Picture 1 (tube, rainbow, N blue to C red):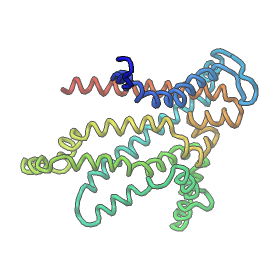
Picture 2: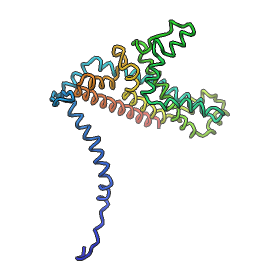
Picture 3: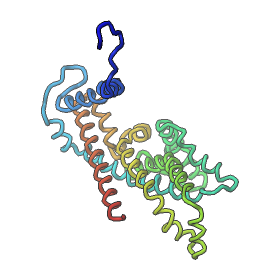
Picture 4: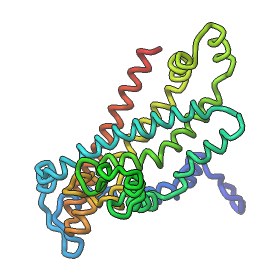
Length: 300
């Protein structure tokens, strides 16, 4: 720059890029990387949340893999995911196909089917806990009014039905969400494909399996991944409806983590359980995506 020239040297493209991403990187570091590193540290400590953390190495992880309730929680959440795949994804797909029409009333039915998504998970859990109550619940009252007293059950108080009841409530709330995803995809399928199939003699069932399902494959894969990862993170319904009971029959990783951390004041152990859950979800997601990728290669 010449002497006396007051012009400022232009900022290079690289410097401008750094300036643009710097605020986001600072926020990411403060609110993501720092808590992650802190959590990894506390996972190797014995910490109540009040006293100074005491380094215990891998003791928390050894305890976790020897904890029968913790291991059973993963079995419960696996059953829950399998159940919700049928009650949410499969039923949502069926309802999207059934309600894929512009006839009068179908839009209202789609809105009614989607309406449970308006409720929060906590509100839905409290509502259905009342409906399924043994003495005052709506379901048992209806059964008794029809003379079916033997069918009335303590749905949330016995191990045989508690987890199934939570699956049903989860399906009731989320099936409409998956229905909307499939419905939007169905609207993008050209109608002339179905018209040509009809002329070739294909009925509705054959069209569903030969046209609809193959063209909705990517949406189905996305919905299955959402259901799996969301199932591992399930907490609200379990907490509000059964709180892990009866006798730990509906205990899932999230409720067991909360119980250890805040009921038993073992935040170090709870953090180790959280790390294990994060690793499990990551591994399952990577395996699922790898299988999907390989199936796509074989397909094409």
